[in-house]
Image (cartoon, rainbow over all chains, first blue to last red; front, side, top):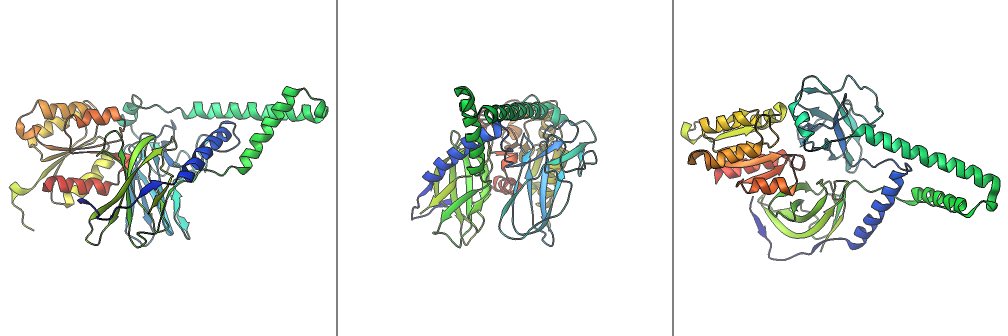
Length: 301
Length: 131
């Protein structure tokens, strides 16, 4: 569909305060996750091999609503990630991958030591609003998969090493906390200064974990100009304009789910006109972090 | 609907994942294209040279011969009828290096599988074959 620039120009930009707030949240959340004071926020579900725990790509994941023939299909990335912004209704997910079967017969519980929030084909029900849906999906290998082997040359995942590292850091952190608390409990303010400083750092981190909100899973468009129109978003590689790296439709509430790999992009905002054509409203530069989603607030005025 | 055999456009899908290839084949067949399939790079080149498709939907991570080599062979070591074929890349490789390498070989579109709605791929195929 041809894109035609509208006569009137609109300003599209990322909200400055939201950007600053987002930066702070990322730093605070990273510290808390490192010290095992907060579980890593799952922006995406991962489709993975139930035996090796390696992510699967390309796996096809489909969301199907009960009583609605319209479905949406996504393909996982090199890290096995996928996700949907689901609308109200009863729905289930279906996963397909050559040489693998779903649901897994090897892992039948809700966690397997490495991944949690596991999905085996159950129905979900969303009563209102739009929510990000992305449980982790184990799949059982039934044959050798060439793609999985070839992918190791491009990207390698070490879920067991990550899990071990996380467990050791958590163990050291909480052991230190117990020892410090016991020492300060016995010696009170007569404790040496380094011990008191250490206790202060622990206290600050624990307070931080209570007051820091989690990063949100979606982006948001704040605008009153096109209230009755469907807004379309497109991320283009900032260095290679013309290469589309992600697309999303903004839900009526303003939420959108736009995934992309870490990098700087040009975000185009368009509307669909009455004839089904696409009219460009404007562009702005956005940065996507390691979480792999554009969760900025975009303002149009 | 009666269609002249010569007017039927040929689309070659070079993709090693059977499930994804089937999804692409089913939909493109429903548009009355003649859909050819190859599950590795070598077969992709063979099919391209034998069938002279109008459009090639190409993955990059492929057994036996990767998509870059397939594209190079089609563009530089084939007769004009084949080397001028339209090519749409559908891959999960997303680095600038990979995209630049492919773009230098004159592709009509580069889609990152994971960041693309398959409907956009089908729309692009229809548009490219109409032009």
